[in-house]
Image 1 (tube, helix red, strand yellow):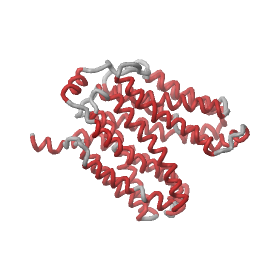
Image 2 (image 1 turned 90 degrees about the vertical axis):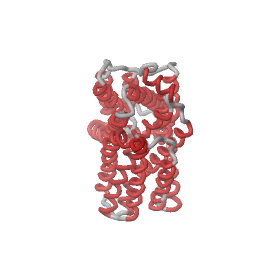
Image 3 (image 1 turned 180 degrees about the horizontal axis):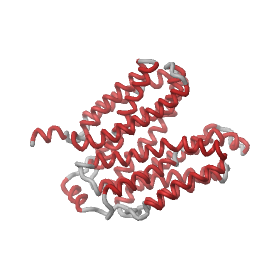
Image 4 (image 1 turned 180 degrees about the vertical axis):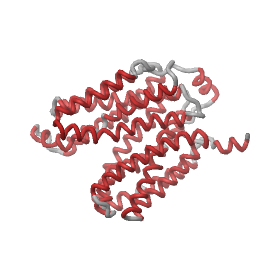
Length: 391
């Protein structure tokens, strides 16, 4: 069996590949809209349905795939998932027919959904509670890096060669799929450690549901702000437009750094402890964005990005540990459901901004972080610090 370091490197690279292809659609939409208009598709809602379809597929199929993996009914190959997403995105360079691209959007959402529960269950199987936070954080950062790199790569290729150049996006996916082909493509049916944990630990579904709600609130605030952050900073916080776009990227990279720090810290300090502190930090940083202006607002934004994204991998590990025997399903729901909630947040924040203004719509989201803090305090998950004192 491949060494854990090599396996996590392969799984993280694959995670970066499948997530790399998701933002390509919104990056191409400005160029696709006039072409769709020539086909009679003039509604922005219909145009947005391309990306919405990807999101909906994730919400449905990530939990479903996780459940199928747990029941040993079907487990998709990690390399196959990457190849399917790469081919589906490359198709945007071959045709711009709306209905054909809608079909490929379904494939992107399905293949992306099939990768995550498989990969995260593999990580759960070759880790323990003492190092799971570290490995989960490395896995999460791989996906975030791919997601963040996609708009830049897509914009460069399109500016260079138009839609035909988008076919070149196929290359990184095929390379990574080939590189990880020799690594395990599927989790084991059940390891001895999993069987022992399931035998002595009862699933805490209420706790898992509460953790899922907390993760959804955090995702709502983080991704809701990302959707409108440039508009707010440039229009209301006296930040120049180009700097505002750079700051939003900085918010994402700060979150990546936070993930790398908080994940391993949760192994040593405790999952619930670091989540509680991070949610407080996220709430304070997010509130500061609106309380201050100019550079102070930018600094608050970076702090908010650090804390709001830092706990993503810890939340996955926590739900897995609350649902022994259903790790695949746990991985699927804690990734898929918050993604769907994030998409919904963009719509509802937009509606609030239409009626009450962008500053009010975004600033009121801090209430969700305050609620997340309270919910985290009530989370039925053992405090590691108490265990150490008892020992």
